[in-house]
Length: 341
Ligand SMILES: [Cu+2]
Image (cartoon, rainbow, N blue to C red):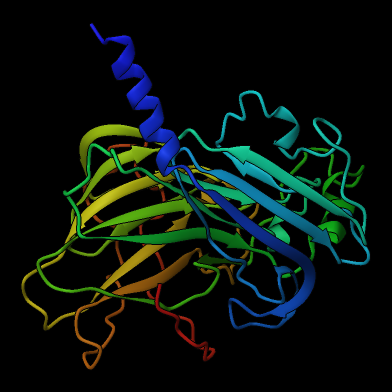
């Protein structure tokens, strides 16, 4: 039985390490070209896109001072996956728990995080986050059951990407000309809001990939060529270790996996996300459903294209194996600066 003094000590320990993490976010339009096809307006923060990662430790208070300088759109922020017990008014859905933040106005979010794990934050003004106002929110845990079982963390976002702005797409999506409600089909897939991402790794180390699907619509198959994954967290909940060669991650889901690198550093390995085309009413012939990145063991070695077939072992988390028998092996030909994660 836990004695009262030890409960008080425990609480004091939590308080002692709790901090206040403050973010000042000035939301404006910026221009970006994540798939290398053409630049378009995206919603950035403090003049930047992709928008910043938010991080805090369990027990911390998060304060986000939002200034909406979009000029032509109201907005809000939602912190996806947090229960917001007792701070419902900080949850973000416009018209549900708060009024929209009109252009030129400020709003302060202020809440304490009690849940460790992988989350994300995004606009909760209708149909707005696919225009770019979406990013990782990582709550670290000094008492993680997987503490000591990995050397480094890597945050990897996966998303679909649209060339048209969502406010414009909404006019046909929700209208009489679309009686079946067919969702707009994305034009591309992205890793960390770019393509051809390179992730430097060292041999013989274990990395925890915090994978977030922050896309609008597309579920994604994800795998790393010739590397096994051990699932340890799903949607902010620790799991028992579960082996997977591939995972299926739907829009808004998160999954953390441990990956141990090889001891041999001569070859680099592709990792791939492949959009689930079964969700699309029409699959345009020009669509490349895949986005490729690389575990880079040797920055002077080449970046091999993934083979033209998916791994034969289906996901442990997917109810079905992918219908896409042959993800295209074509890579992005438009030059695009690669970015390390
Ligand atoms: Cu959400």
